[in-house]
Amino acid sequence: LPYLVTKRGRLPHCDTTVIGGITCATIARAAVDIARLGPPVDAVQAIMTARDHDVSRVQLLLTLNHCRASRGCPRAQRIIEAVMPKAS
Image (tube, rainbow, N blue to C red; front, top):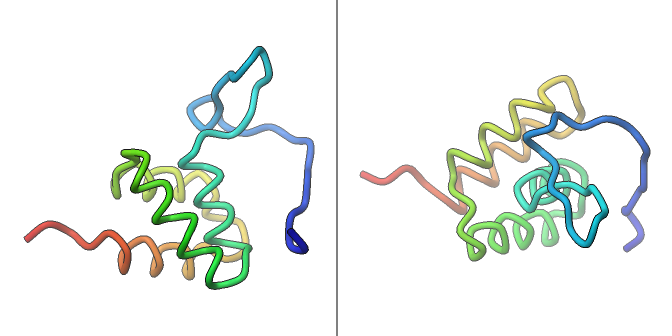
């Protein structure tokens, strides 16, 4: 993926999981990061994929709060709210 950037750094513990002994980002964090930084089609697909893996709207918005100082947060919030509107 041309926009994919790997970066070593610290994520909040709640945004990580261990798979096969390797610590990595949760589905929610990965989806939020793609929604913030990826091309629009991939951004929407990431949120839809998270939804399809039972990640809730609230989980995505809480995860987004962990990156509030980062670029792309308003766009990610709009995508989350469009793909997963509040229940009426």
